[in-house]
Image (cartoon, rainbow, N blue to C red):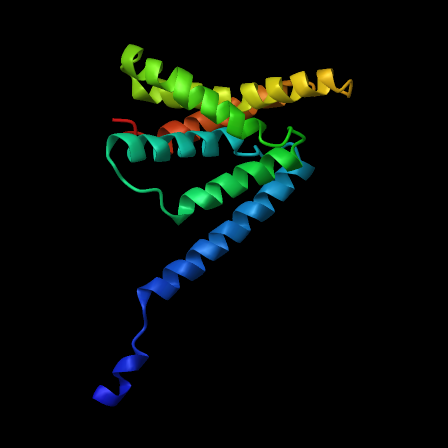
Length: 168
């Protein structure tokens, strides 16, 4: 029996395949959300996810794992597909995390409300940055429609459901 011990299955391979399949699903979903306005683009949800990752890194001294790099890639991919300026989400996150988030942690004791504010900021600030750049370059600005409000409500409820207790 020892001759076949190398044939045991490894769980690591299963996790790699599952994560790869999930990444492909998210990229296909994001492309579909650009074609059909029925699907929210999940920009605010992933904005809140990066917020919880950085919070864990700073407060609980946990390292950022490989999923962090996929989330960053996803956000850059989403902002390009949906017409935002390149790195507008990164600039928005830096402004939110380093200037606003630290103050919100001291003021607001209901952490789920901070997640809702993160989703709102994840949509509004890249929109404002993109429109400011488009105005300076004398290009057409983006229109803020009712669908953004619907996306914010859907993704806020998802963020509260998925990340409840992550900012404690």
